[in-house]
Amino acid sequence: MQRYNEFGPWLSGWLGCKAQKISINAGFTCPNRDGTVGLGGCTYCNNQTFNPTYCETRKSITQQLEEGKKFFARKYPTMKYLAYFQAYTNTYGSLDTLMAKYEEALAVSDVVGLVIGTRPDCMPDSLLDHLEQLSRDCHILVEYGVESIYDTTLQRINRGHTHAQTAEAIRRTALRGIPVGAHIILGFPGESKEMILNEAAELSALPLTTLKLHQLQLIKGTRMAEEYAQCPADFPRFSVDEYIDLVIDFIVRLRPSMVLERFVSQSPASLLATPGWGLKNYEFTAKLRQRMDERNVWQGCRWSGTALPAE
Image (cartoon, rainbow, N blue to C red):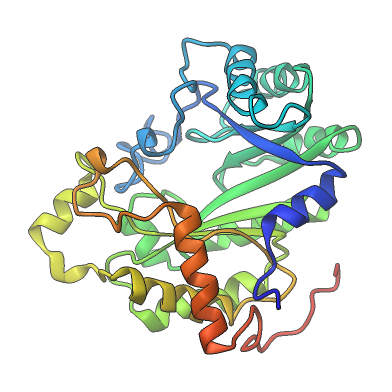
């Protein structure tokens, strides 16, 4: 039995081929870093935790993609690729600058589309107009950093936007016929288990295609790591088994049609301020599936909503 709606099969069906995402650092910043809405960025953020070694801003987008292709082509010579604009806010710039970067990526051979990671307060209608047009000739997925649905949390972590802005951006993007992804972090300070599980219903009511979950990781040198050192009682901390059950309790409350891309993040141990679980992503996923089998539950079995009109 398929316990949840997996990303891999959905991606192959959407693209009509097997494809791999290649992360890009295109040299962007964020409005909560440069003073537009704040300074210092998100309190938990260190982009070193998810950037592959080939993601260096001194390298062109083309060079980063070609190096990423070489990495994967050794095992999968017929693979196609999605250029994943991942680091920082990848819609934060002039329209001409943004489109030049996207078009450079699409000009690389075997790149069949873009995944654009961004913030909900950085998606003007003028850019959506161009992305809608672009999506007629290639595959576009916009991935918003939701992080939390609670404005108190968003303020505490220095996001610089509200959840109302998040919901509005997701709806505007979906109305253009562009698939929309979301990223959310479980375990922020001040959020109870009940609050975390309530997020599943809110996200299910939005026209999201894909969803990434992962645990809060405390990274050395971040403001959040300093907050934890000063007041660890504020932070819900989970063993791997506790987190697996939390994720399952979240999954069963999600709309069944939502595609789940990941459940955990794996940062380098050298960057962690607190010990990690020592599990690879695939090992965590295997444990999650086994536990769902043991509990005999599946995505949406406790979902109380109705299908969205677009589905």
